[in-house]
Amino acid sequence: MTLSTKKIKEILVGQKYLSAKAFEKMEVELRGRKVSLTDHLISKGIITKDILGQAIAEYLDFPYADVNTNTPSPEKILLIPQKLAETYNAVVYKQEKGKLIIATDQPSAKLQSILQDSLKQTVELNFSLLEDIEPLFIHYRKSLATRFAQILEKEQRVAPEIIEEIFADALAYKASDIHFEPREKEVVIRFRVDGILHEAGRINKDFYDNILNRIKVQAHLRTDEHFSAQDGAFRYISDEAKADLRVSIVPIIDGEKVVIRLLAEYVRGFTLNDLGFSGEKQKILERVAKKPFGMIIVGGPTGSGKSTTLYAVLKYLNSPEVNIATIEDPVEYRIAGVNQIQVNRQAGLTFTKGLRSIVRQDPDIILVGEIRDKETAGISVNAALTGHLMLSTFHANDAATSIPRLLHMGVEPFLLSSTLELVVSQRLVRRLCEHCRVSYPESLENLKKRLPEAEKYFQATNTMYKGKGCISCNQSGYRGRTGIFELIEMTPELKELILTNPSREQLWAVAKQGGSKPLFDDGLDKVKAGMTTLEEVLRVAKPE
Image (tube, rainbow, N blue to C red; front, side, top):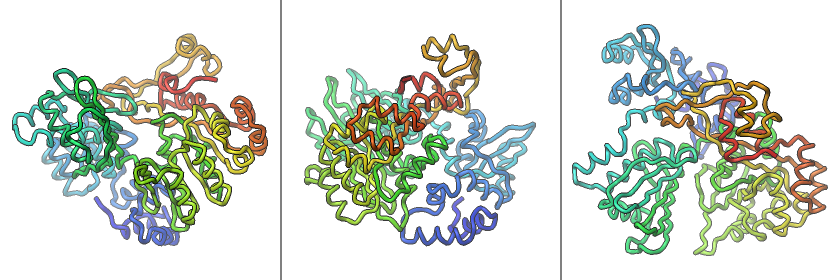
């Protein structure tokens, strides 16, 4: 069900979720910008997606089914034939005595009658948002191997159809990367989902040349080059989804290996509320981001979600009253209302030159994709000193290490002390699947086998959580990822300490006195809350 802006206004204002004055202000802010009203309201934290769903459900006079939080099992979903489910956007939400409670985005007495006749069972309809229902249809998909066999039987347009199935599956499973790995007689296809690689299927090597050439053509790469590395990009668009794809091809012993990074639309919807910040840490980040000038650095290794965090900050700050400019390599996600520049070294447009140009473009907020060298660091610090809010990523193991590394790059201590406002360090851990998560008692002795320092963090007996594994999480016990974070907000004591060119240990000692907590501790808070496991936290962080 697609609702007009006028109808959304009628629902939210009529049911007192927003005042008419506040709504009119939003409409003025969005005038001429290519962003939907609901996306804007949610990204600004004015309403949540659940509140929007509740409001629409109340307006339609149907109960609200939160299928995103209380995900129905695959067995329930498959109770409705695929064609019927996709025609009416309907999934079984719950089963009660002799009755199916079905979530749909278009509840009505007519649909209730249709479903009851088709399913030969009593049906009760609930309202749910379409964006929460559609991901559940993944359970109707056949395996890639089955679909490959069906394509090969036709013996027509093999390469395009196989590629289409692979891309569709990768997006459906929210994969971040697709790997095509040639072996002696076949090609293995693997997806990276939630940071872990999983085999998705295999194809006979006889068909790989055509598939490889098609990918090269789409990515504007040379099809006659087989012995050197190539990099390219293209946009994938289908009826169900679209994504920007970055392609890397390198020659290996058995052929040319392809890795495709998917920059998908679903990540673009992330807000600060979705990233895993505790309430206290999010308030600190929001407060610092509202300052008119200064520098915010987000650190961590490759693939730790640094860019996603900064994009969420930009969305939080984005409004018609400010001029936001970015210089990135690459531009991962396009944000309406933000001026984004792509680094192009062949044309001489580097981070340094792009940043110099941005400063002359009258910006209020600047994002530098990564501080990599002394020159970029120097210009960034000076921009923050002259009235701009500067955001950037940085490769460092923890928050305290970022400061000595910037000083080592040649940034003057008095400049860094005057400009730096917040340092964030982060990692990503897999979330426990909410459908199959269970609690269990765990003794301190058992915990010591995995964490020798366990007695500092746990009691004699503890309630722990694990995922049993189900179809919903592909038997892994995990579904999705969340961040664990370490924040150092600059205090007068820390600013004074920076002037002395301090070590990492000296900085962290003062930061802890000011209330900073280690990355590992934030991870343990999420373990105790049942969001992830101790093994996941130990995979990316260590106790002090």
